[in-house]
Structure formats: structure tokens, C-alpha cells
Length: 105
Image 1 (cartoon, rainbow, N blue to C red):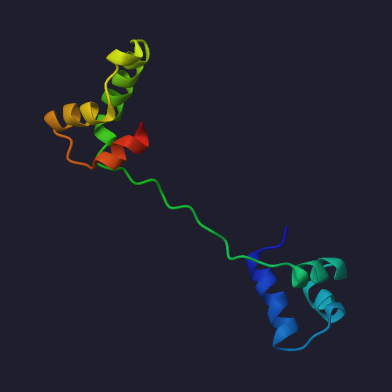
Image 2 (cartoon, one colour):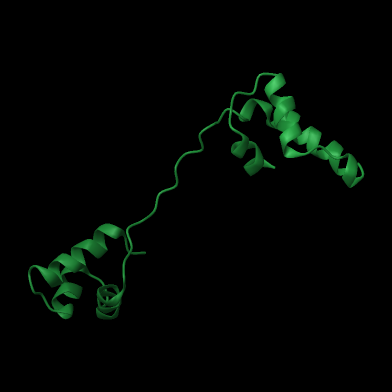
């Protein structure tokens, strides 16, 4: 497995120092085919995932999940709307936004 550091090193050797693919392969210990592949490749910088951050809805997720399960068994006309669920959560102390709630639903 080749790392991003190695890819950067290969590209620097080719671009700045003008080394041939064969010389780069000899210096890095990689196959000439591997060096050629990574010089041709359109390398994107790695994208890191952000750690999950709790939001204002987190303390109410269990209550909301139970409400949604209960509503799933009701006839469609008797189910609570997102606006109604939002009002119920606000009554028990939810201070977050409506869009957070609808994203969860």
C-alpha cells in the first residue's frame, strides 16, 4: 500500500528534480509500473471525517424515536406532523432548530 507521503515524494522527484520513472523506482523501491501509475493518477487529497458532535436534539432522540414508532402504527390521518412533534419537543425543553428535527425524521 502506498501512502500519500510516498505519492508526494514521487511527484516531487519527477516535477522538481526531473528524475525519470526508472530512477524514481530505484530510489523508492517501488515498481516502475507503480511509479508510472501514480504519476498518471489524478490524486485527490484525503478527506477526513469529522468526529460526530452531539447536537441539541441528542437528549431527545430516544423520546422522538418512540413517538415515531408509535405514529407508524397509527392511521396516516392520525399521525403527528413534524411541526407538531417540534412543538411537543419545545414544550419539554428542546432549544434546537426545526430543520435538525426534520433531518432526523
